[in-house]
Image: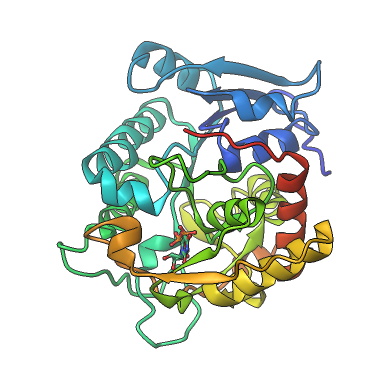
Length: 350
Ligand code: UDP
């Protein structure tokens, strides 16, 4: 792990207890930054923090403890904002909650960074690009159009909330001199990604990896929404974290820019992913998984208002210019994640 030489800088990570945050904090323990790890739920961090580190954990709800949030930002040099609902089923079941948290609450963090002149890393999403619409071109930060569906497909509220936040951050850069970098992650996968679900848990609807992993462990068919024809490019969370650490070290070079983190080489259809995960699961456990896959219409799986991104290819030339190259190919990403969930085979419902 690389180390920064500046011992005086404090980095406040909001959303440190989530999937991306917990890996980021783990990487930051090997640096000289003073790290404030802030989340409403710090459970995932317990697994990664050694006894004595440069990290202080702070459990708080940003929507309630506003004075404390302001104080933390004031006392920091760099702010990383990872707070978001980032799960398609939530955009469908709770579109108002999604826009409230992902736009309005985050905007307040942006405004505090403007007020106290802090460098902001705003995590956004590749979902802002929306539909590929058969263009089959990598999504480029400066040139690609952001194309979403009609209002009745309310999945797009997430994409629009994040896009609006990006636009306001950009405007603050122009008008108030805010120093910032917007990160657009493309489908990160790895240990601690999501909770597993069982049949009895009607509330649970995490991302595709957890659905497939749960089905494998329960010997049930893997659900393919609308036939699993859409394409995704996956990145191992360790590679994604390595990209972030490089950007952090080179932040002045990319000040006021948007940066994709993703791996075009690791593209698969969702059906292809199901087949790969079955194969890897059999190899890892010696089982002969026979339940296969089952096709499910999206309205049945997610409810009304679902729409899907057909294809997301990242243009990752910015991180490549920092010497970044992925270490995990598609098979290695999913083998690693499957191993983790086999080892921790207990169903946690939320
Ligand atoms: N999907 C699926 N089966 C599942 C869960 C998701 O076929 O059990 C599909 C979903 O419709 C989408 C893709 O898998 O095409 C990826 O969905 P995910 O929830 O991981 O997030 P996204 O990449 O859409 O943000």
